[in-house]
Image (cartoon, rainbow, N blue to C red; front, top):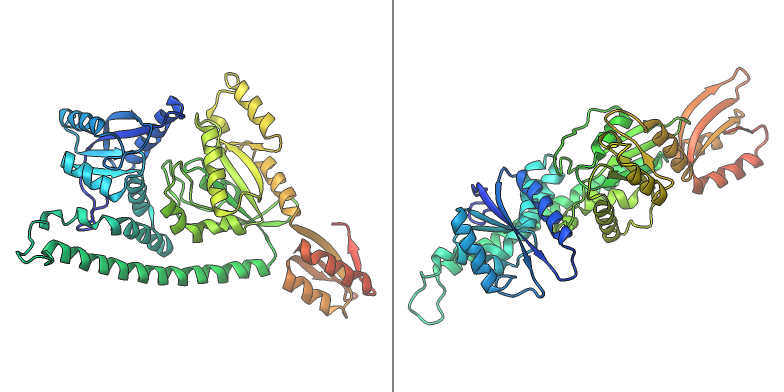
Length: 439
């Protein structure tokens, strides 16, 4: 867990998970949310010894839940000898402090769990900076948790500041200074990313971003399509950094594929903000490949969560190709209704298994069709004097093949963005000795 005193992880072994269900929330949803929280907690090597769902009409300021229910939970915690309470709902800094005063143990919420997982997964400079920034912003309003043991060391003069207050102010100043430094470093990283993005745009290659819930097989899909050695792990948030690979499609078009960070229900807004430089790959891509886990009982929740995050990023209007992964994990005879329903709801979707390779050829054909909506593949023959058209093809398109004939004519195969296609066609029609071949 995030330790606000020394910034290291508190050693906790036995946790109780606490979920909160509102009157209009189905009981099954609250259970599913706790199940996912248990999976998140398992990534921190913390054992879950009990799960409690609290029915709540209105959040309360002191403990978020009522004081009577809080006392019941504390009694249960003592009986089970749990050393940590983990809430599935966000706790304010004051509520977290109140719980720790009541229980004298570690009390955290879902956001802190996810931040800890991200901290353990971050590897590149950008991800490390983003995670540290999110952690410090989370810690800043909670500094009093680290220095409550100094609260009684006040002087006798009325209005004088105690040592604890001085320490908190010093730490707050240091944290704010570090946050400012991190923001500057991230600005530079984003500038470098923008330069790389402009370089890709100059080559006019179609770009697709792979998005979806965490652990649905996005990285596996990128590895299966590109043949690259990419980290693939059966764990939440295995990939925090965008990974881009270029693939060649059946019609010889080239496509850039970017794997993005996975989504999760109740993804803290602070993390969405911190990872916007990573997630903006989804915003700027020509189209999205939305991957769903066909074998997951939370299939619909994954769909809703992914759309929710895309809406927050402003990318919900993008063209989306829906891909149902893990076809090998379902019983096709027993799950005929599932297959029929998903095919009815997503008639243009693709069903595949990255493990067995089934459906990958169909996906490649669909990717060719999607890429073709944004890029045109042209095959032309240009006379030697039309260097202007050759330069235009290299500057605004992506040349796949070129060779000269004995008479000096140049045979050129290249892809070009739709917005430049018509202009090139006009130049081509106006030129003598130019010919457009079937594309």
